[in-house]
Length: 253
Image 1 (cartoon, rainbow, N blue to C red):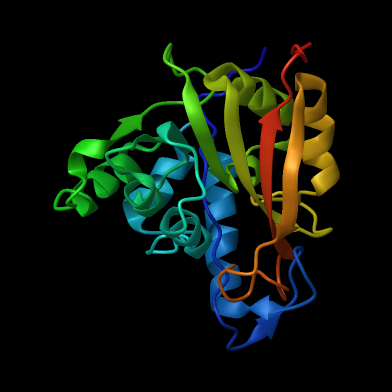
Image 2 (cartoon, rainbow, N blue to C red):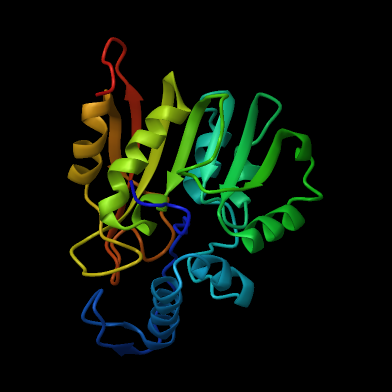
């Protein structure tokens, strides 16, 4: 089995356009943003073992929303999420971890990048619910965790790893989630661009990986609260919200 220690999750944000140029993701996109993405990809591809951490270290974090994901705020505000233990792989600067956390839901934010975990810890230090979450520097694929989770929230962690490793992602999710737990995936970018990260995704990609492990979609809908540029993106494509549960009586292969 290949080593996964050099893969890190990330979240990609689309910034408003100012000027355009040709690029592999789409026919046109903002030149300044495009140059940053190119540099990020070069760092990751030239030095996979430390590329993501280097991006955080130098502030090359074009994926960082710098705020909680709006759909997470909506789900929390309307009490639409499982209680218990939650995991956010690729937590980055940790805004979603803090938003999800409550006295009824303990959240672990996981990231491979030491710099990301340091930033998340600093940003969350004064949060009123600071006892309801923690940040861990570790590799999602090799992290030694024996206590299972009621909820796993994946916002484009899936698109940050090479497609050949997606099967390992699905098996790891199945290993970490309680039998009656829920997986939430914000699926992005849904399009046909080449290369990455971010690597293109489709609903079929998730179904092909999760169905054999006993997961079925509770719902897959457009994310109406997606950040600007992601509902119908001029760069990377659309974003959908998927909610998955493992069907009782169906054993993983």
